[in-house]
Length: 133
Image (cartoon, rainbow, N blue to C red; front, side, top):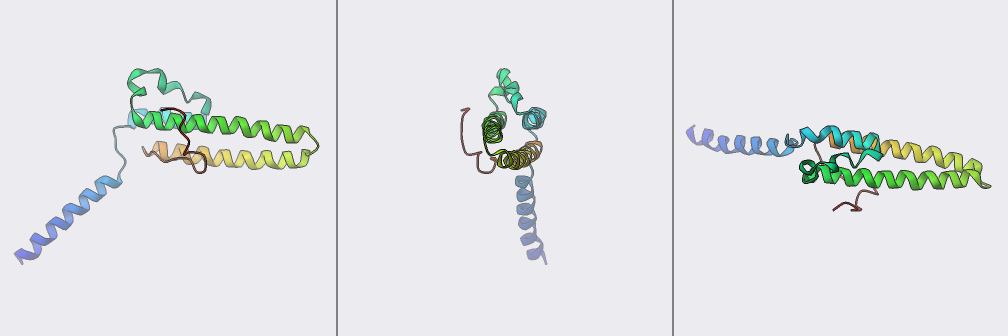
């Protein structure tokens, strides 16, 4: 019986270690507000970069980069949909504008969710670009 209990103990230690790795780190919890706010209002991506302490944190820089990319995409797609709306394709421009708004909303929810959970996940399709280094 002692052999079984000794073999079970390393399994329980491994399980505790894997659970610790699955949980987000609490180190970034003080920066969470900036990260989530930057997704909801992408033009505020630069706020955490103004402070030297927060500028050096990789979590902050990652989410600021994602928010800047989101801001650039929002501006570019709004110009495109407005251009199509004002030209001969007003119906296509209107539909494209609605699809763009829905996609941007999905990106905002995705980014804010993972920022709130202290995770650094790239936005789908557009998140692989690096502007801020």
